[in-house]
Image 1 (cartoon, rainbow, N blue to C red):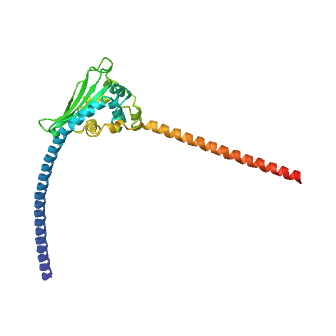
Image 2 (cartoon, rainbow, N blue to C red):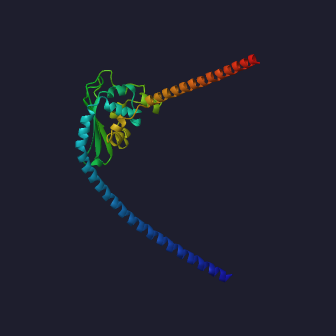
Image 3 (cartoon, one colour):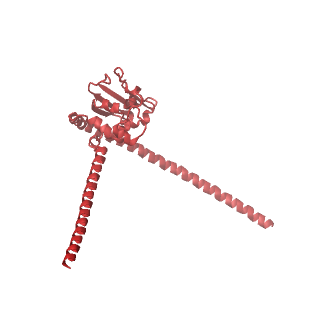
Length: 270
């Protein structure tokens, strides 16, 4: 029994020694992982700096083309309101009166600041309209001294009785009806909403999705028209089927009449 007890003590000591070795190895592995991770982080930071330089370079190269595109878009009536109405996320924010107001929208410009990380600005230019006095409305997103995202925008000078942000129960536009059942707030409420500048969905959609290629949304076909055309096609097909069935039934009646006449002739011959 004494021997067994001694063996158990030795085994516990060995197990403890192994555990200490394993823990030491694990700790060393963690330290090495941390060192490697620091190198990865350093490379990621370096890559971000290089990507930023490339973005800045190509942003400058794009500017003449953006300008040329704006000049061409100006020749197309209602280009921007059509683009917004055809965009699934933006159309869900538009009531009928918003859409009417946006018919006076003549130009949209997105400007990314030279230090892209610091923010961007979206400018909306309007023709004379019955809703507000402003010729241009802007919303700007940037980073304050503390590094927190903030936004600021033009104060809209509404004409008497035309403040769309104070009207409740706007009727959703046709496109919006397909995507939501609730009545939307006014699109123009966005200019006064600075609650979450770091996650401004509409701003990001305009900057990253619409602005790079607005033509793709301008050219989106009206789904309701397509559905209507489909219904017409179905009606035509059903009409053709009815005609075919009618002709087949008439043919069968003629065959039956013919058989009856043949029977009568046979009887007369007999």
